[in-house]
Image (cartoon, rainbow, N blue to C red; front, top):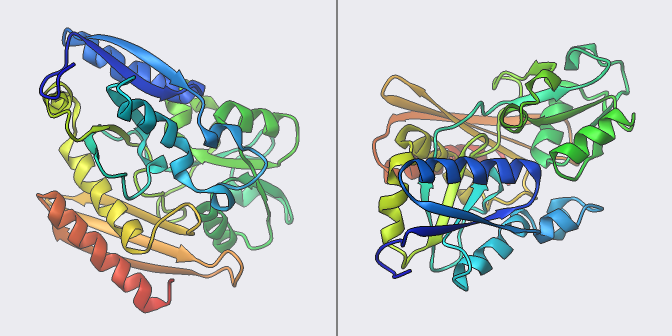
Length: 306
């Protein structure tokens, strides 16, 4: 392939979890529908291998994308498909987030074999999650619960629930929907209860910045309303020094022509109290979206978030 235009064969780098493969296959089928020959390069990342510690303790979300970026850098793959919530806020030099696709349901899902909702859980019940964001949000809703770490891909997390290790677990609704597991969802949290993570439910496609011709191939699949919304969300996280070691939520929703952006921050080791901030603006460019995110981050910091 030249730096200017993709050849007839595109290679997609992807993690090998069932959900990651579904996402890569989805992009593959879209590209094939427009006449491209496409193959997948499956890879196991450090994030998939280290399952005995929380992400915040072992290097953060970048553990899920580093090996894929190496494949792009070495020319073994042309693009990488990511769950956008797993993509670090700052990409390495030479890489671009060149396409954001239309978002699936961004909400969190309550999954349990015994209880129909978070409210039905008995006092002291054990809820599994791997996310500091979900920890602080759950503690704000139900400070009586035991929140326990839960790592692994989606199938592994469901298996641990089915084995009785947890009374309930919290997962992204989008992943369950994409894998045909929507029936496992007992409750979808409204964003007023559990504010989603930046980028949750959206797919992002990354490539090397010198591969300009790829933008033409992927442009038909970009969804500008989603892209602007997640740009605002990611700007909150970036301005707060965002990583998965930060108990931060950020979610944007369109209200007509205006984008309403909400942020929430909590201290996982302190009182179960959330700090919240929001702002809205007419947004038509990525720069305006980033400015909106910066304002919401500033309000969170002014309220005491750090």
